[in-house]
Image 1 (cartoon, helix red, strand yellow):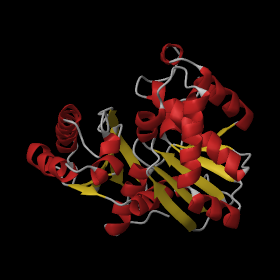
Image 2 (spheres, rainbow, N blue to C red):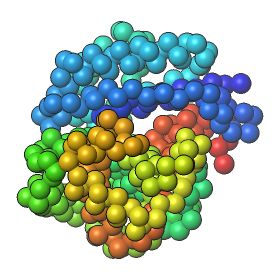
Image 3 (cartoon, rainbow, N blue to C red):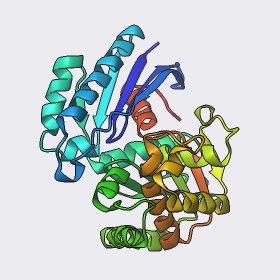
Length: 310
């Protein structure tokens, strides 16, 4: 039985997922973990990985390599996204990672990232009409327009939560001036997205993991998000939660049950981003997909190794 590992080196968090492939191409998840390395800390918008973040990333990969050895993995695919691909010292990190952990990292383009995300979300079965998939990262946010059968349009924008936070989040709670700067920036950067939305008229917003897991988990605390492939998010309940995040102080959010430390401030940026998308699209239906880039990578490995993934 083939075993494969997908590593997603995100701007905020590094993820490792190990799976075994059945003869039909079905995935059996053997192990999952993540490390909040905060690779984009401090100077993300200057395209620099600072030394402390650099070292945290290498330590996380050394730990991942140990698990990969333990499970007898035969195929490893490590993909680096916005922070590594845009950093002046990104290739230094890739080289150091190979030396320290033995893991070969490929920095993928925003388009490749979007394709993997689509492949992962599609595998959940949640796409049942023309939809807009949104994956909010720390460095970039990917948007994919699709239907049940095909990807219609995709684009990655340097509009991640960490980038927005470093550039515009200067008040506590975030004031109207900071919010206006963010809204203006989003509007000026997303003309092509608005054109695509007008053309394809999506009716369903699907949030890929990350912040959307937080939204779903905080709206329904009894949910075990780890056991779900997808889950509907009630739009009115989302709007109330979003307003709560935006209007609260850092200390108030830090005290909220179910909000992990990494997201205490990032969730404000994710809420503003999601609110903006709902506003420009008029979409009235939201779902969470817990499958994202890493699951898309695992399905791609199966395809390239000759397996079937539906």
